[in-house]
Amino acid sequence: MRKTLFVLVLLFSIPAAAERPSGAAVATAHPLASEAGLRILAAGGNAFDAAVAVSAALAVVEPQSSGLGGGGFWLIHRAGDGFETMIDGRERAPSAARADMYLDDKGEVIPGRSMDGPLAAGIPGTPAALVHLAQNYGRFPLAESLAPAIGYAREGFPVTPLYQRLARFRLDALKTSPAAARIFLRDGAVPELGHTIRQPDLARTLEALARHGAEGFYRGPVAKRLVTAVREAGGIWTLDDLADYRVVERPPLRGRYGGFTVTAAAPPSSGGVALITMLNILEDYDLAALPPARRSHVIIEAMRRAYRDRAQHLGDPDHVEVPTRQLIDKAHAARLRADIALDRATPSTPRTDAQEPEGTDTTHFSILDGDGNYVAATLSINYPFGSGFVAEGTGVLLNDEMDDFSAKPGAANAYGLVGNDANAIAPGKRMLSSMSPTFVTGPDRVAVLGTPGGSRIITMVLLGILEMADGKDPQAWVARPRFHHQYLPDKVFAEPDAFDEGVAAELRRLGHTLEVTSQPWGNMQALLWDRKTGRVSAASDPRGEGMSFPGAAGMPVLQQVPALNAAP
Image 1: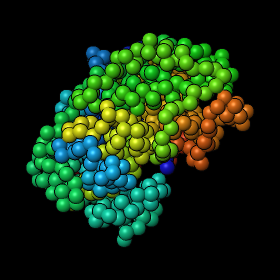
Image 2: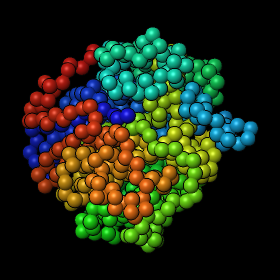
Image 3: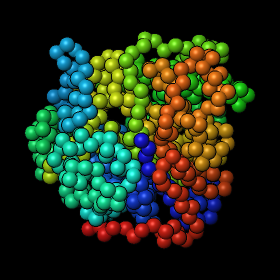
Image 4: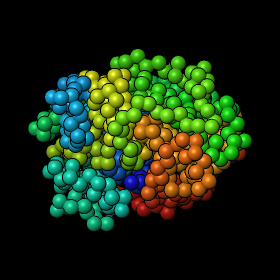
């Protein structure tokens, strides 16, 4: 399964300057979302207004990956004062959630219970995050930034091969929910290519959000419909759960790699901790001087150790003590590096029945405006089409992010990730995430990047950063062949072209178990601002279905995209 990527670059007639880019870039997972972001920028909005528009548009046209019924992390940089923050719109467990809610009377995990239907859904954070972003950082009123998404929901969007593939994958779950089947299927089957998906109920929910802000979703008629539908179908949401939801702003994590500063997502994302840990381990190696197999070997060993830390220590910092500072400290990395042997792999123990990582659901976008504000945002409803459940009368497709908790210590979730008590289910708690929106900045360059990909997100971003640190351009970051290790299962997953035969043989001789996947994975969206020249470039992952549009002065790119659907 792959995500669609679409990158548009919009250039204004602005003289190049060290602290101001020569243009703006929008990289999203769908052409209509890119169009929405570009039009907000062209109308005078900033990167944060465009982020609201893109987030909402993706919630409409990419239901397999994100939505109002999900959550995410928005990493933002404000040019005027250099302020950076992470807007945490991650879902929360309902107040009636229990640590054993997905276990049978023998204490074993019940298959599918944390994946399908409303019992699998956490309280959504995306609507609150969009309101927060608009009110605190944008120039435009929320209604203006949401207008493109409302238009798309009313007028519809065409079914693509990607949509078909993921709808087929989640067909049983979608058929179980009458409202979901009515919207996303046709006569109980996957719709044909080009079929138009219209969502009038979702348009009305977006309009309520536009008129009333967070109150329009978390209280009032929409909230009542959500709770009624969830409880009638066996879920445990309450009106208080919705009314009590709050966005949290968190200081992002920062690390150093060579001459670059890496700004990354803080817990409850595991992305920043794991990413900085891996880079700290690798910084002491001259990677360029190592033979290809040994270079891959030490990167794999860094991945293994960072994911072991993830499993043992990470969770919601509002509920458990997370030793973040110690984990990203270079002294900790030195201890982890000390037992990496160049001539053999380190076995991951204990072995478990962890599943293989799968899926590339979730979505990411990167935005830079002409003033130098930028946003990296990764959003999700977890599995493709989330829980498969739509709350009747709202058009809101609910997440199944409760599966990102540890249902039982040592038990694997849908992506094969294991966890411990730090990520156990508790009322009001945010579940651990792999979403990793990231900035990498140096004296002359600013990179904004991220990707979907479940448990593989963090290692994809790592490989992209290593390419950037080698001086390569965004196209090289996103096209780089990928490999992944997540501690358990003790395997190296590799794309078909990640290793040549000689390197693969040498990795096996060192003791690595290689599993070459039948399909590539990920859909990285990246942009680069060269501060010396002001030049902006963006690249779309060749694994995706999108394409790049380099713009020119005078914004001719707007002539190359279809007219925006009518908005209210």
